Image (cartoon, rainbow, N blue to C red; front, top):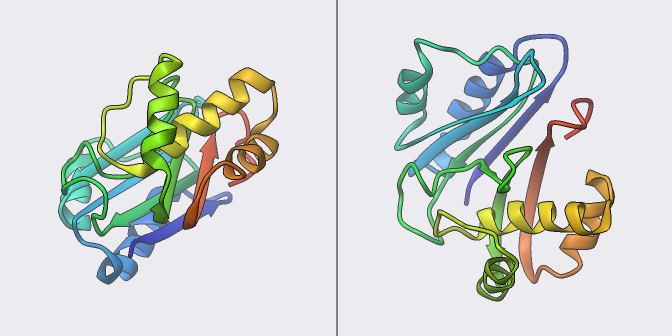
Length: 173
C-alpha cells in the first residue's frame, strides 16, 4: 500500500502535499517524497527514507515554491526502503515525475527493454520503470503526455494507480 496525493491550483502546493501525506502516512511509512513544478517551470523532486517528518526536515531550509505537485508515501514492495527507492521517480530527462501504488508484474522485462535502449535506471522499483517507459514512448512516438501514458500502460501488466507530473503540462496531473 502507498499513499498518493496531488494538487494543482493557485496556492503553494508544498503545505497541501505535506498535509495530505501526513494524513496518508498509515498507508506507507518507509519513505515519502514530492515533486513540484517550480515558478521557473522546472520539475523539483525531493524524497527521503522514513516518515513524512524526515522529508519535512530535508526541505526545511528550501521549501518548494510551486503551485502544482504530487506526493507519495511508500510501503516498499520492490526494493528496500531508501532515498533512492523513494517516489517520485523521474525519466532520464528529468521532465516527468511518476508516483505509483500497486505492482507492475512485468517490470523486469520492461527494465531490460529500457536498458537495451540506453536508459539508466538507478532504483530497484517498478515505478522508475514506469517513468522511463512513459518517457520512452513520448520520445519515440512524439505523443503528448496523456496519449503516451495510454500507449505505455497498454504494455504494463499489473494492478496499479499512477499520477504523472510533466513540465510541459503544468495544467494537468
